Length: 296
View 1 (tube, rainbow, N blue to C red):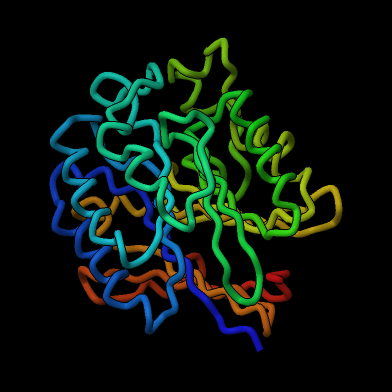
View 2 (view 1 turned 120 degrees about the horizontal axis):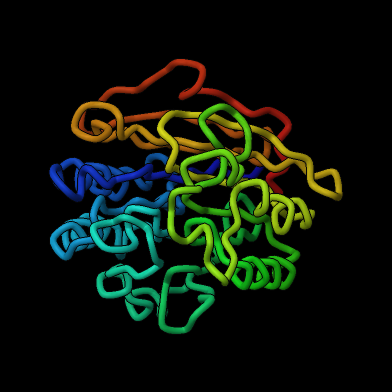
């Protein structure tokens, strides 16, 4: 029987990086300390790492995520607050690469590659768990057309692996895929970029539904918790989940997601836990089991 494994999901940490870095570090330290007990094989940060794209906030984030290095591999993506002057997302410029350079990860056995050689803004990662090879495709906020093409190529080139997509904005809090009209992204400068700008519906149509090995999608951005299951072109089910707790006290009180995948029993068990408070949220949006999941 295949041993269950766990993905740790870090929702938007923007308020922690700005005002409560000790809560951010409490999250990553707990993941590192409990990696064996929970068999945590990867950590996924859903973006909005910072709140205002400042050096101080990036340094706080770098310190907190650094706790995981040498302990649990992680993938990380930028959110809208990580770009533009004061985090206004008017352009894709960010201090992200100064604090999370490719060189920080390129020698790791799980590191696959990047869209641009000099930037981690879009990356992919490889790991083995549950007797199955897995691919993580980590995409920028509302990915450009060329990024979608790159992600399709990476996914197709790893057709023997199950695929997880990590991005900042995808599932909306009202249990549907996010579309650019109507919605808050219409006020963001990158929406009119000549390079293209793909929302949740676009990314589903152009990328996720096209591949039979697509399995899981995780995102933040929208405040709340929501999930949907989509059916790909080949009949495969793609489980897509939003989690973001930044509207709570102290920017989220340290809540993170633990996603346990059990290939033998074909289940995905999700729990929401705060190492900072040592408490769980156990309502139906934050603690649930997906049955008959194809994990191998």
